[in-house]
Image (cartoon, rainbow, N blue to C red; front, top):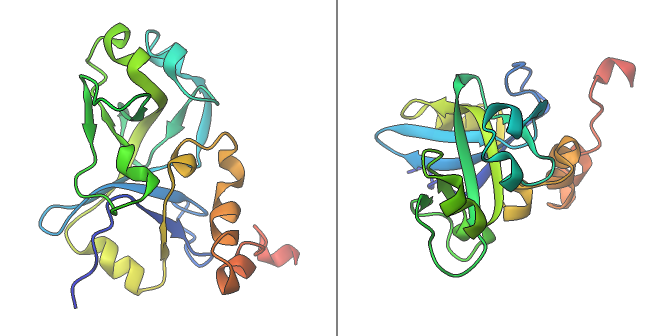
Length: 194
């Protein structure tokens, strides 16, 4: 059976995933291609580094908290940005996600070309988040990890990507699912202290 496309969904780390790169992470999937693999960014790992310190001209457009986010362990020396247009038009330098989940609020999200002059694009954005690095999986790798129980595949909202309280996002996303996943949201960070 084919794995459903993950673009525009969240990969939420299960408590059993103890890889320090992904422990308690919430990954927003930007692109999922059966032949090329999966690309996403961790949306709940803010750094202490203001966007202004790295991309001075973009700092005033970054959504709160206006810091760089650790998007994942791959390509940490490069920046990747997600944005949501402030109006109905697709601004120059903004590219929509390819085939996101239909009808969801993430359908208005897209990637930002940080080489576009910020004075042209920045004002056309309602929200902007900048990531250092990304999470990437080769063809079939993420499906295998999901099958092993490392990830919950859950619906995403634009507010997840631009959360003003990213440290609480893992528990909040699980809690809103209800049932067993709401119970998982209470799983202690260190089970040995329970």
